Every structure is written in C-alpha cells, then in structure tokens.
Image (cartoon, rainbow over all chains, first blue to last red; front, top):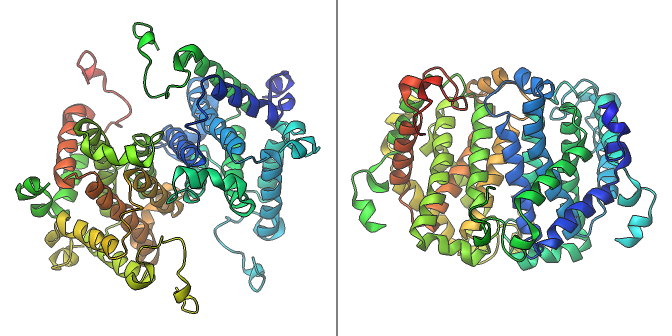
Length: 136
Length: 136
Length: 136
Length: 136
C-alpha cells in the first residue's frame, strides 16, 4: 500500500472533497440528482453493502481475511466497497454534510463511549465491569 | 457547507489517509483488529447502512429530502453515515486497498458503463435504446 | 388471491412446517447444512432482502405500489421475497425455533408496545402523547 | 422442537394464511397500511435483517451456532427473525402474492439450478465442472 500512498491520486493525496466532487460530477452529467433523494441513497448504500457481503457470505473468517492477499478477489470486493463509498459521498452531498467533520465528530463520541483503557482487548458489545456505575 | 469546507478539518483539507488513520488508531488502541476480519466488517457496514435507512424508513421522498434542512435530524442521520464510512475505511485497511484509487477506478468503469450522452435524464436501470448492439 | 387460497398448495393449506421441511430437504440433499451456520444465514437473509429492495430502489411509493398489479414485476419481486423467506425458514431450523410460536409471541409484544387505540392512524416512530408516563 | 410441533399454535398446525392474517389484523387495527408501501416494506425487511445480523456480528461461526443452545440468546435472535418474517408476510399481502406458492415455485427453480447430484457437498457459488456446457 505504501507505494500507492505515494501516488498523487492515492489516499495520502486525495481529499474527501475531491472524491465527493468526482461522484457529484458523474451524477450531474447524467441529471441523476432527481433520483438521489436521501431515502433512495440510504437504500443504495444498503444494497451495495449487501453486494460487498456476498464476497464473504459462505466463507469463514480465515478465508475472508485471505481475500486481502488474492489480487482478483480483493479487486472484486474493492469494486463493491467503492460503490458503498460512492453512495456515502452522494449522501453527504444530499444532506449537505461535511463528511470529514462528521466522521471526526463521531470518532470523538466513540472515544468517549469506549474508553481505551476499559475496552482494550474486549469486544464492544460487552460492557466492562469497571464501567458500571458510569453513564455511557 | 462552504464555510465548513474552509475549515482545516473539513472535506477540502482532509485526505482519505487522515480519516483512515483516525479509525485505525481507534481500533489499535482497543486491540479490536482481531474482530475486524473482512467478513465481520462487511456485516458491520451493512448493519450501519440499515441504521441509516431507519431515518428514512417510513417517510416519503419529500420528507426525506427535508432532513437536510433540519439540523437535528440531519445530525442524527450524519452519525449513522459516519459509522458506515468508518467501517468502510476499516475495510479498506483490512483488504490493504487504497480507497481513493479504488473509488477513482470504479468511477471510470461507471463512466464507460453509463455514457453521459445516452443516460442523461434517464434512470440507470433502463438501458437506453441507442445503446442496444453495444456491449455493456 | 382468493383463487390461490383455494389451492391445496396455497397459503390457506400450507403449514409453516411444510415450507420449512421443503427448504430443509433441499439443503440436506446437497449437504449444505455445513454452510448454514446462523451467522451465514443472517448474512444471507440480509443479502436477499437487499435484492428485494433493488426492485424498489429508484421508484417512488406510487410506482412501488403499482408493482402489485404488474404480473412480471410482481413475479420478479416475489422471487426475491421467496429467497428471504427460504433463508428465514432455514434460520428457524438452525436456531431450533418454532417459527409460528415465535411470530405469535412477537405479535403479542407488538400489541402491548403499540396499543391500537393510541397508535391508530399515527406512525410507529412517534410516541403518542397519551402514552407518556407509561413505560414501553 | 418436536414438543412445540405438537402445539396447536406451532409450525405443524399453523398455516401461512393464519400468520399472514395475524400480521394484517395488527396493521389494520392501527391503520398502518398507508405506511406499508412495498418500497417501505422492502426497507423494513432489510432493517430487521440487519438487526438479526447484530446478534452474530462479532462472534465466529462456532459461537454463532451455540446461540441455538442458549435460551436467552436464542430468544433474542428469534425476536428479530420474527420481525423479518412479519414484514415478509406484510409484503406478500401488499404485492397480492400467495407466499406458499411463491416459495414452492422458487424452490423448484432452485432444484433445477442446483442439481443435487452435482452440488452435493459443494458450495453454491462454485459451479461444478460436470455442469459446464449445460445452461444454468
């Protein structure tokens, strides 16, 4: 991945706004914003998320992890992931949300909800005993 | 939105790598990568996508669009969108994918699959007559 | 529908157990129960639910309702609905749940949670004022 | 399960029509059919399917299978399964589909698509070599 990160079109040099505009331009050129109500976009995100799941539906966790090392399977899963992200960027546009700020704010709330010291090595769905008494 | 875009922590000044690292650090501090197999992450993306849908489940397209102008409803939907995006960033990490490159590549395929001239003002699910004979 | 209900293979003459056994036999003949862990079945139900959503993704509520009167579109949606139900029956088997009892019990809880008098003509997501003070 | 099957309200003695009418009556008493367009019901099925997935999100296949033997976890998962099935029954009503006939028809197509002899012990996503040349 390090190599790609050096790329001027890779994660290290691409802003959220650039990707969002790429999607917005595609939609505008086809006059598809009429279809892109938040309701339809929410369905679309869920539909593409399900297509991503299909790549892991019948295989176990080990085989699922091995997808990362199989260029063909990784690319196929990546296409679905790109679809999910594309619709997420469209949704941010439709809701007039700054996605970076929104993700940063949610991560702050997650830090408060799941203190690192209490949750280290423990699953999120089991409230550590030491937190009892605190409000979440 | 323009105001937020000026923010040093907003879409215009935040790279994909920055957001991805924010999520990765949160996971690492809690040693949660053991739970983050691509199979579990795919489920998580779908689960959060469904929580996003809940905000639009029973309302019509018009009311759904109005969510963008209601600060409280917009923020609530934004939290779920942030969760979807957070897991997408974790998935990119788990699959060792450069997300920006992956989205760019998919948008190029979308441009080829849905020529702007043929699809302008027409829904994606109805193949324009003028494309018959071409391969998709 | 009344005609079909008269059919010995229709809703009025088919028990849950009959449909469940039909699915179970199909799975057994292929020795597929090894793939049918509850985790995989939950994913499968969600994946088929998303395929059902695809039939309504870009159309409005009115056009969605008209699907019921279009034999071809209705049959296409019906195939996806059958897939969802098929996996639900398999899940009931995998969890050793009596599905009829489970649905009946949940409907009783729904009756208690949403009193008909208070919720008549009001959406489920808005708690009627007259219920304030009660616990749900 | 055998005990429950003897129950007059269990799978062996409950028709699809009975469960469907149970759901329909609940909806009618609250005048909720106005919300139950097929589009909204498709979203609802997917949302409840995601809530069912939550019970298996972070656990492995073995722990997921053990849910069947833990009365409390089994009941919790069963509630979500009941919600999925409830909305499926409402969808059948909204689409004027006989669900039993629809499931039977789909199972016949599945039998044709996945011949037992060819697929025995092999996953559905890998087409057996002996079927090459046949149409699917």
